[in-house]
Image (cartoon, rainbow, N blue to C red):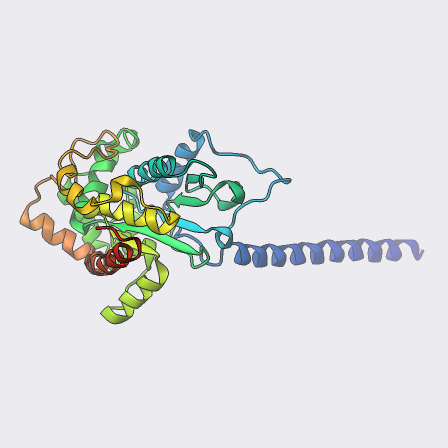
Length: 330
């Protein structure tokens, strides 16, 4: 007669052990995720997640997890480039690769572009300069990025969604430029409206660049400049593309490519002929003529980006002078 109670007690004991094991494993998983990436990237909207997954499926370098390999985490990275969408990140990546090839005969550092792939997918021994479309983390030893004129940046986001080959499937969801801008102005202090705007299957242009590098400015110029200077080895202006790339490469490698000598002078002649990656877009941020009303709406949704762009130019002038003095170049 005592067999049944004993069986029940044994069964309950097994359930308790299993439950305790699950709790312990869950806590360990949370702690491990915090160690690996305590400052996770901003969550993506549903359409962005789908878009990135489509991009990754076409990326040949995407590799499956190998338990025998040692993989990279944020704290393993020596050089980390934050590619903010629509700031010519693919062009910068290509130029850095070219400079590595032209200045290193042996032991060339490997430059890799992981887009949004998890960092554990990388072998840390094979990636000395990592380009990624993820947000700022304090773990990498040296961080770089490029900031674009906010007005041009917003226009570029719109036309990427409306015209690019990569986004052609979702272009049918895009309204006119005026309607798109007005929708995001209405979403400035209204997250319900922001969620509704996901129907456009496009970027959220509200201070997009600031959200990648700072989340929110402190509205204190001295404090903001100090924070940005501390966070970034180089934070460079998009509008000075050639000089910006040269400063980034020199600070990363400690070498001066021939094309970076007198880069500022050469830049004046190259700006007219430079071919950036256009993704099949017909209209571009820097050349598209906007109305006064459109400019007003853009200004409302980029107040922090405008300040960030101003701070970027100030910090870059300082870094440029330091680089010229240390390496004896102009």
